[in-house]
Length: 268
Image (cartoon, rainbow, N blue to C red):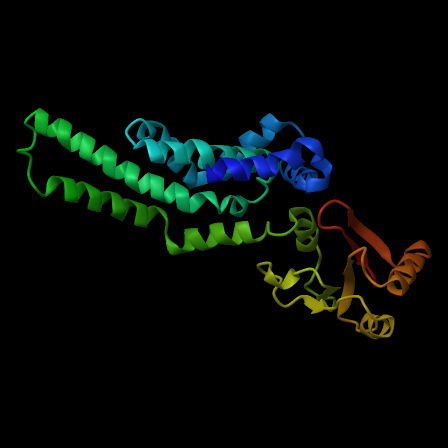
């Protein structure tokens, strides 16, 4: 009942004023990430992006028929609809599905227990209970060792790094990674969280774009060669930047206007 009340509370604005909810911005980012505006393509992209976690969702299918009514209701009322919503609207990052993962882990664990109990019951009926006592623990231990071999520390770190590169705005991040930071030009002047991106931890000069004099002082720093400036910067700073773009002093590299709105500008 609580879940239904929550759904009705959110569905109303989605149906009456979809634009005002901010959801179109998330859809635009997801479409940009998978290069398609079709919902079906976004769904396929979401399925692929789940990678190893997809097996947990597949596991829900056989487990569903053996779980209790309360767990079935949890799957149908929360896990399935929220996952579909994520897939179509916000699948540009799997971490947007974080609400589902604890519930998915709970249902999966209980599902494994129910399936094991069911299989052991069937084995007992077939009088297969005379199998060696060490067989089942041995199989489980073998499976754990296999998973530890497949998902090594380096593999997990590599997967985390790739996901970390997609946070906030994948489009902006892609442009940042294409910058040549090997020479004297090593810094980006911005309030965008560049320093949390893997490999760019030391390439940001933090500035909130709220003081023209301080901006002009920072712009003289020869190590700062790029601006990543938001549209809500101080108007005097925006006016100066726009003027230098028009006169050719600055070079506009990239503009993003949806959701995370920024302009990437070469000032050297």
